[in-house]
Image 1: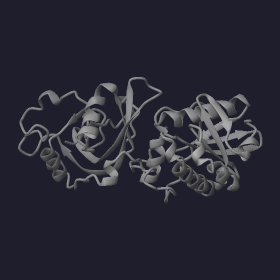
Image 2: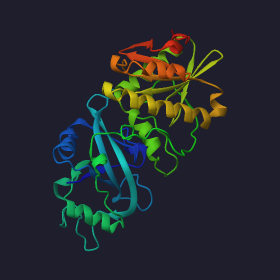
Image 3: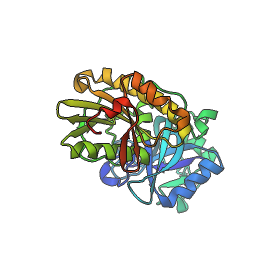
Length: 326
């Protein structure tokens, strides 16, 4: 059975770290429900519901989008909260809660019942399809790849495609959530979303936090945007840092390939802003002995490897040992 997610439009009405079409932030009380439908039932479909308050014109009290959910991720910066990634998101024509006969789509009756006040809830498949039909949309059936636990990065998407440039912002502290600033009303494309998904992971944010504090302690500063994890300044030197989480050792090679693609992409895309910044790939864990060739590959491509273990950063290859951080 698909899920319905309540999504506020204005930040004033939403104390959560949602990013529409990218990631959903929710309190732990809903975790058993989310896990039940994703893990036990295997249904990752969802509908967005827009509340009445603070909604844009034409969207108050409607269903307005649909897509596929990833796996729940604990929010390490806000105890008692979780994230769930959003994949393959599509907008649709807004559909009111009631059909033309005054019947609620969700309940099939004239009463909403005990669904009112629940930010996340399930919906019967036929009622889900009725809402999609009313919104002139088609259901996205979970494919084998989409229904699994793999993220966009794990599915082998390494080099980002055509992504709009984004203005740099000062990073005094690592922003909570994904630190994403929307491009008007347009949702991010899958490549940008893949970068933002990773920012919700605890070891990714911890890695950035350790490195940012290290630069700041030495008198440096940092910038970031929707794409670049950290652009650090230290004296006359500049550093382009891409952080990668390692949820399990076996993904280190894929994370390296993805990270290298991002570093190369951003050095060209933001050539004027980065001004020859030195590339650094930072892992949130140590590279296992079975993949000890990774530091050498990065070395020969002029990329420093930094491994952040707990609250300590250490050089992972020869190029990293020459960094002023060490």
